[in-house]
Amino acid sequence: MKKFIPILISILLFLCSCGQSKDSLESSGSTISDTNTSSIETTSTTVESSTSTESQQTTSTSIISIETKPQKEVGIKWKVPLVMQNPELPTGCEITSITMVVNFYGYDYDKITMTDKYLDKSDNFYYDNGQLFGPNPQKFFLGNPRSTSGYGLQCFSGTWVNTLNKVFEENKSEHYAEDISGRSLEELESELQSAPILISASIDMNPASPRVLFKDSETKEDVTTYRNFHCVVLVGYDEDYYYVNDPLGTFSKLEKARLERAYTSTGRQAVIVR
Image (cartoon, rainbow, N blue to C red):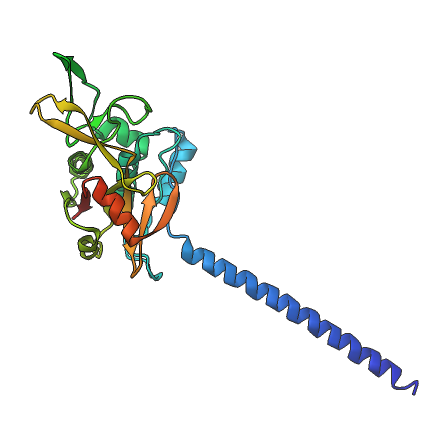
């Protein structure tokens, strides 16, 4: 019997070791699965520098080398670098979304440069016989995206096109921006096959409220702006959802009907790069 005791002990030790290996393997498998899921869900890269220091510029440049090709993950079409508007541009959703598109096409511009150099802005509001007049949001950003107070503090698709084309023309690019406003999001799905699209929406993705605060100083016609107006980059879709890069700092998956309502309530404004 004494001869078998060492053998039994060896067998017991071996069995305990296998159990620990199995647990370890299961834990490892869980980690790998979580990692893979994370890599699939993470579809946009945060790109931003609030100042023009050398180190921040270097970081931005290194990230901009993203390929402008469709992603392979299910339900996601384009990898567009995510740029956040805050804290520097609290009302700058449009120029921040434009910056994402510019970065996507390989041009290394930050949101501050885009705001100061390429975005046409105007705060030329005035009263005449008790009537307030101001600039056209299809030509100018109303006020300044650094501000949280003023009339409008938004700009529309015509201004987006002009801003993008300034960058393309300066770089002698064959690309150009085109206003494709007025179409439903379902109709835009075919356009999304070729490029991401700038679209209007609302901050909370609920229907926005239109309002008339002033008249166009040139045409003397009423100017409609929107409470909670927002601009995002439409990057993909699947059967049930749309996917957007939101300059408030998130990559969002939204029910199609919900985004359609927000988009429609703000005039169905859309711009694509050809």
